[in-house]
Image (cartoon, rainbow over all chains, first blue to last red; front, side, top):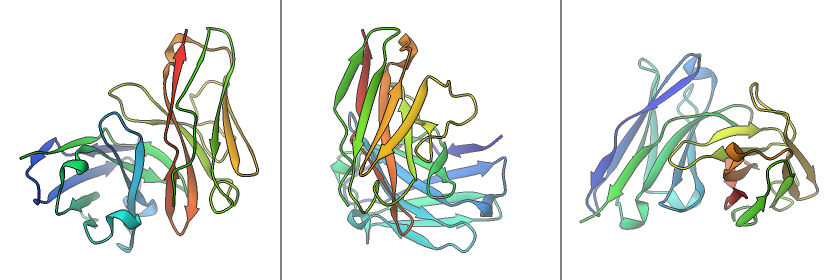
Length: 117
Length: 110
């Protein structure tokens, strides 16, 4: 069965960076894109970007351009999302979600990132 | 790309039907049959309940159905049950590998 297991909660100071991981299992890692979606407290879902684990190509939402980097490690079937220059508004739960033909089909459990001085 | 437009809340009594709308543009909802709906209970990760406008993943009850007309997609839940109380998000492919979400709708079962 498909499983996406994310790293644990993080607390960061403003201006710092955070790296969240998402380990995939139960399918061929390089066959599906992986998306990242975030949800601020009490707010809706917001698409952050996507990575193609096969070639490493990425596409980011315009508002995160320059601050987000998505990478992958095919040897461990893990994708990473690095967000830099953190501010309080980046406090959110970050989800990885598997892509399939221009949609999402499985979600990770989420990782809470708290930005606070 | 702006978020898709959903009503902030809807409600219904057990056994009734409710419909949640999701309005986009000719660049997203109106251009692609890649609209999905995601159910999220408090403190939980979202779960896909409808994909490709009308399809249901295995295990999702047929009380959940989807449709689309022009730039607006809809989710209908018939025979409301208490466990359907949750937040619902629509999501559309926006071209060039991008996805766009709606603002979310809180469903209350009275």
